[in-house]
Amino acid sequence: MQMASLVNMPVYGLNKLEKKQFLTARLLELTQHHYQHCGEYKRLLHCIGETCMPKDAEHIPPVAARLFKEYQLKSIDEEEIFRLMRSSGTHGSQSSIYLDADSAKLQSQVLVKILQHWLGKARRPMLLIDAAQSVQNKNGMTARAAGLQGLSFFGRNHCYALNSDMQLDVARITEFFQRYEQENILIFGFTFIVWQQFIQQLEKLNLKFNLQNATLIHGGGWKKMQQQAVNDALFQQHIKNRLGDVAVHDYYGMVEQTGTIYMQCEHGYLHAPVWSDVMIRDTNDLHLLPFGEKGLIQVNSTLPTSYPGHCILTEDLGVVHGEDDCQCGRLGKYFTVHGRVPNAQVRGCSDTFS
Image 1 (cartoon, helix red, strand yellow):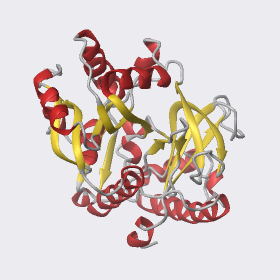
Image 2: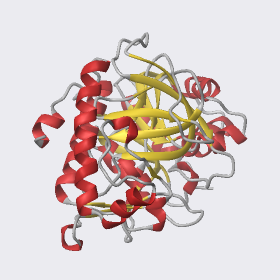
Image 3: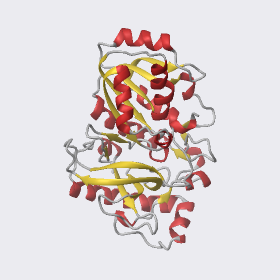
Image 4: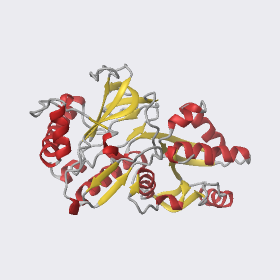
């Protein structure tokens, strides 16, 4: 499929039959591509008994996310590497994701399409709940840096809320809010950082602002939030108590499939865009589970061509609640995430800050 045709697909516009047809064809095509161009992936399929290509997407063996930490999984030559992406985890090794120029461009274009669906095309005054230094990394771009950089394209007059030591710059954010509080402000940050370094600091200082029509996008770090007994509803309540009229959207995503993020709708569900799919597998034998049952999250993406990241088994637990029938009206599967598998390695964009 041509890149332009792929990018121009409707974000949440295909029904389940149309989407299944598209996903099946594309994922099988990618499986064949990576089988031919990535020796490690070929050996992986052989080790689990796959000596011929699967006939449908459900039977494509997913790659365990942790394998990207242990092997250089790439389907391109060294000289074709345009960008090296690394996961943000500080405990243990990091995932390494190899992108050529076309893959990087495709991921970026799809991310823009998804976010434009939620934010529109107009750039807004933007507050980033992080330090400017977080986007600087000489050893490859981290997931956290990529998130900050990717979302910054949707803003203007950018303001970083934290100093280089990750402490709240009260004077800076006060001036920003006073200047733009009547406009459609965009706020972005990683969940635990937003909570600990921003909201809790505002509460300690007893600071409140009266935003009129702001949007906060945040993601990652829910394991630490759960350890503090903070759920999504409580998180949103504290945000609105301190900032005023703010639409809050969580998202689910990972460096292994940058571009295809899963945004949270107004009813609290994460949504799979047209370029990706979510499956739930049993934690014991990995068989597929029906809607409503909790298990391991598998994420499929039609974008990765430079590395075999099209079907990934995560270490997260979740539930798919349905398809094409969410009250928000968007087509596709919608789901919730219920934390990490017990004893799984902690990782995530927010987890890099402690």
